[in-house]
Amino acid sequence: MFDTLKKRFPGLYDFYQHTQRMKILKKIKKMENVPEDKYAELIENEYLKVLGHSLNWDNLQTYTEKMQWEKIYDKNPMKTVLADKYRVREWIENKIGNDYLIPLIGVWDSFDDIDFNSLPDQFVLKTNHGTGTNLIVKDKEKLNIKRTKRMFDDWMKIDYAFTNSLQLHYRKIPRKIIAEKYLETDLGELQDYKFLCFDGKPYFCWVDLGRFSKHTRTVFNMKWELQPWTQATYGIASHEIPKPKNFDKMVEIATILSKGFSHVRVDLYNVDGKIYFGEMTFTNGSGLDPIVPEKYDKVLGDYWKLPIDQERKK
Image (cartoon, rainbow, N blue to C red; front, side, top):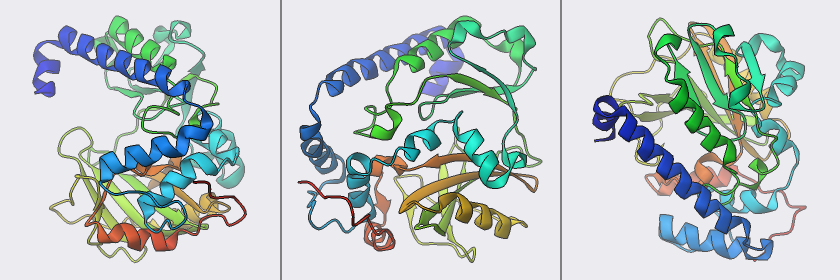
């Protein structure tokens, strides 16, 4: 329905999207006033509502349960730096070199600062402080600047620490808009490889396909053996997904970048054999996307050893 609305009535679709973002802002304003000592209760209620069972803070066993603890009790300041899509670039350069960075075209503090005449015909425009806040521009001449400005102005107002339950490490990210080189593969669709890492070791890699059509999420272990689980309702691809020829190099990179964290998802792109860094994700799905089948939620949870030097609060 929304695809039809977007194609036939772009102005109406744009207005609908704007109203949805305003609803998010209104919800955030309420969340910002919640005292910190109520965060655990808020998360308990949200987890019960979405996943259907209660949290026991003294006996967290599954992946999604442990993610709830991560969101409010792991206050490692590096999470904020690495979740920042602009500041993380310097860290990546120091860790593995700038060859793995998607070329940066520009960075601005507000949409009004952007000189679109200086931009190439194709690029990706995104905010640095949120998730899902990006726009792929394949033909600059067809870009509606007025609608794009409204979208980015809305996004820049949103505190993503409060959009999907509580993901507090997003809160202190200085907000910017960045433009990166548009990447395209011989296959057309950008190959997105997401490595689930625990204590500096990658255990699983899933491949997201059809992000803007029929979205699938297919999971492999480090031997590229298909796994019987996925996340949320995406489902597994119906066709074979070949192992990248330089997969071992991707594993090596994910190992380097995940070192020092009890859990992080390292996202990489592979563009016709060229590896690029995507992002570091510490609260995958906010721990509210179900693992399907459910029994694998516990399997994943067994890999995750929560830091023992931090207090678990109830």
